[in-house]
Length: 189
Image (cartoon, rainbow, N blue to C red):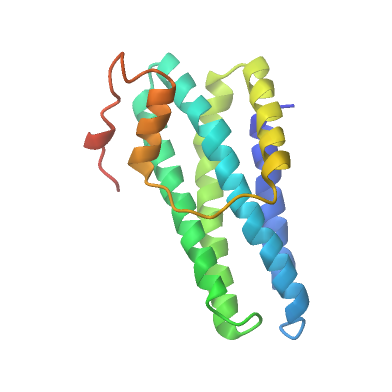
């Protein structure tokens, strides 16, 4: 088992659920509603699992490989992306299921999520597979799967401040004492 593969599996499931929504007729609002609710909860659970398990490990291996700046920027961007996805999910909830506005909001959530997944697959997962050995990736996969299993019904959607998140992760990794990664000086694109 490899955390990179678990994350890719979750990406596949997210894409699958969005595709299912596209194939259900507008009149089947009860079905659309339950599929959307499942997807929205899954997106939040996935974001929390990444924040708790994957991102700190990616920062840690980036530091060990002396490429922390790039890895740090990826995590800042990922936390920002998760906030955008969360905001898009909130927008979906503002519309009656099955209406044209609801579909537009779902499409916006799909777009934000797709952009995040593509970037993560291109950068974060690639970096992590290159920098972390299989035993570490297996250990994290076990923790990731356990986190999702334990928290599937309890995750609350709350936006995160990317800089505060990275600073807290640095502190937990005890790197603040050995020198900051200068998070405050990073500029967002």
